[in-house]
Length: 255
Image 1 (cartoon, rainbow, N blue to C red):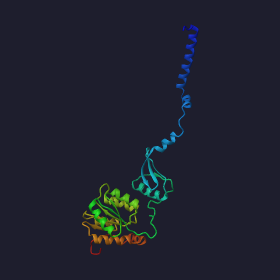
Image 2: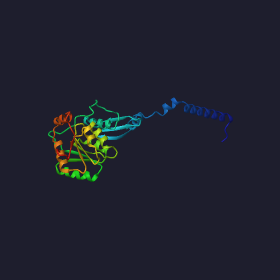
Image 3: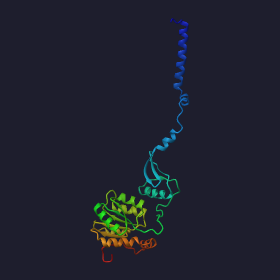
Image 4: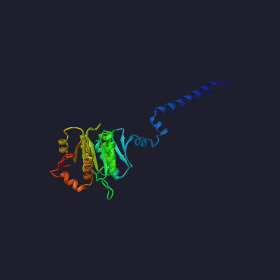
């Protein structure tokens, strides 16, 4: 169908005006912003998803953000107390939703609770199993840890009434673990059991409750565990704060 030159010029003019309008829109960021608005929930979702849950304490979740911040969300004050101790132990500065609590918060105990939970921290799994079997036969509840970091973590979470601590622990040396345990559970009695020679003086300097060298004398060790776990808290505080306090060398004549 033939088209007159006048119609053709009019068509080209219309085409150029539409193309110009399209190019103007593409170069105008304000026009683009209005034509394709961002979803309002995207920024909130990005903020919520920028962190990674690295630990749980009851109903509380410890979140590490990509910018290095640590934050605790949810949970009860008791969960926050445990999380605070864990963060202090591993030197993490976290934001807590509740007011600050003391580092060594009071350990919750059931009314008339029997002090019968023992933590065995020893790298030798055979020895741990043997000790656990003996103590369980005596009515104790036993937790086990195969390295220093696990020992401190177990102490924070499980509230032991006494800790048997070997010095030759992987990942965290026994004396380093003792220093951290003394910080987060200062009133829990500790008996150091070790094959290292000449460690009693260091145990006495640091205020360890009792000390025994390997090979272990199991009957003497069990008697010491029963004695220390039956000691009420006030008596324990008086004993360890007494200037005349001396670390007991188990297996000696006065054990």
